[in-house]
Amino acid sequence: MNLLTKLIPFLCLVGLGTGCSSFHGEWREAAKKVPTSEQPWEGRWLGTWQSDANGHHGGLKCVLTPGSEPGQYRANFRASYAKVIYFGYVAALTGSETNGVVLFTGSSDLGSLAGGVYHYDGHANATNFLSTYKSGGDHGTFTLKRAQ
Image (tube, rainbow, N blue to C red; front, side, top):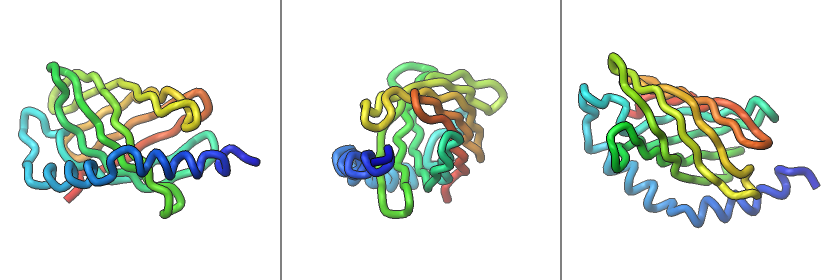
């Protein structure tokens, strides 16, 4: 049995257990807010994820909000795979802003069945949110644009 076959039931459970409705509520609430010039990267993002390790890919949504401390951000991700499997998780990011661009790093532990701890490195401005990700068995990219 290949890894993907093992992961499909787990990813379905993760998708159900991560508060799908809370993501959608947060997504709707973020649509009502206009990003400010001081923090233009906050808000809704829409795009794709791509694994460089195995070629898997899918859709990706993110709501990026300020964290509890300056320079901290909360990235609430909702991803799809094969247009039928959805899963979500939250990543804590730490960043610094220069000239309207925030450079960030962060991580999120998705559990051993989903690849363990994922590490993120990227940047965002008013229109683009780009990041790489790495875990023990996977690595790839997130490419997102400001959602309308």
